[in-house]
Image (cartoon, rainbow, N blue to C red; front, side):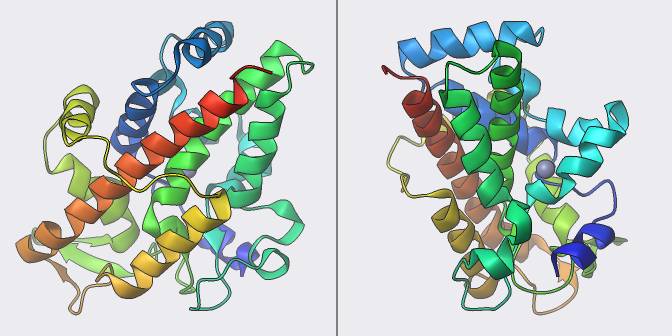
Length: 256
Ligand SMILES: [Zn+2]
């Protein structure tokens, strides 16, 4: 299913939209240790960037800026679970290591190893920032064979769209908050959020949210009640992604 979903994963719905990715990056940056922050800044400078949010959408932007690298990495933005038990089974769910779980592990290891060339570590940082965000978007770790909701048509405010886009962008954009405002709002909700775990467990959580938490609407209409119910779930996932990205970076860039 990995192949078919990859083929069906048509632009532009490909991960949290820019707002979601930037919010995750800002939440993480606010939770870095001074040591990790200093090294992050050195690595970002190699890419002409100052903040994690500056590189948060780079892996999606490759579609236009570097189609060859995009083609090589486009299967790393999601996980397709083979069954609705939502238990990660790499031979089925991550064939040849081509999924978000394996990608986070791989690029985190490249980032953590100070023997690697700085430019390679800086690229790995950009990938990690993006894929930790994606894996928390529930439809990026789904078991239904509908390209993560890209093939699930719905209506929003009288217009046709698809469920993936609703989760990537539409619900978050409907708040009319900037990434800075949104991240401040979510940070103000406090640090009491379930974090920790492994990338495989983060993906399994996303899969269970798809299965159990009303992500797939009973009708094909995304109405106010849907957003009231699901937007807090999306925001919780952003907070978890931010906290876990910070934990990962603090670990990778901590003391040897
Ligand atoms: Zn993505």
